[in-house]
Image (cartoon, rainbow, N blue to C red; front, side, top):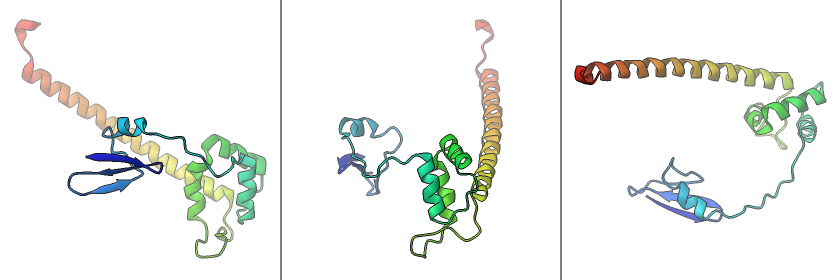
Length: 150
């Protein structure tokens, strides 16, 4: 595998010809990428949560309590909520306004539903991991236990 850092992006290629951009395969090129990291200049100015609320309102999202919405954005993170905002916009219309009737509470309910699903999945995976770990431990100890060492 080869990695090249060009124009602020990591380009990688497996020997089989599979290539990628913006992604570093887990553990394979992180050291190489870190050696050649350059400081990236961001062109967008920082926007406070209240400015983001005003931007969303300007795009047609109904937000009855702007301070409460700003606190939620600060607590959850705008980028985490952004996918829910994007999914409720009219992407084929100039300015990409929100679908009429969509409210900030609709977006929060979608986020909360996804959060509940994620929590349920992690809980199930955690239970599975415990069962698998215990089964492996039991199988290994019953197979390799030596009475002379106890």
